[in-house]
Image (cartoon, rainbow, N blue to C red; front, side):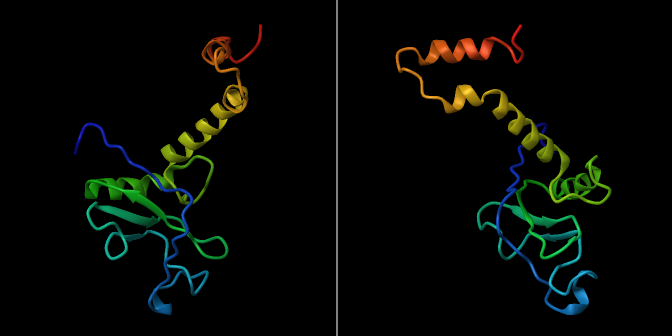
Length: 141
């Protein structure tokens, strides 16, 4: 296992899996595969090893799976078990908690940097104004 592993989670894609027979379906619906389903052959990338996982059960409707490029089998297993550790859910989450937390932190950071990111500044003063906004801190004193 490498000392550093970079894992990219595709959060908003539109892949759906359905069981081949009703006997292999989730108990809630005939259309959803059971939770803990992992697909790592057939539809994944040809030259790179990745996998699609559905760690969570469907609450209603169909379940969307998560695409995760991985490098070792241990990453697949670790990702699956991490989905059960999300502190805001009593069941398995669709994405592992580090990805959820990173998404929430980035959303919060965008709120603090909104003025710096969305506003048009004069080209000759752009760097100085943005640097002043960045270094003033979150709360005005």
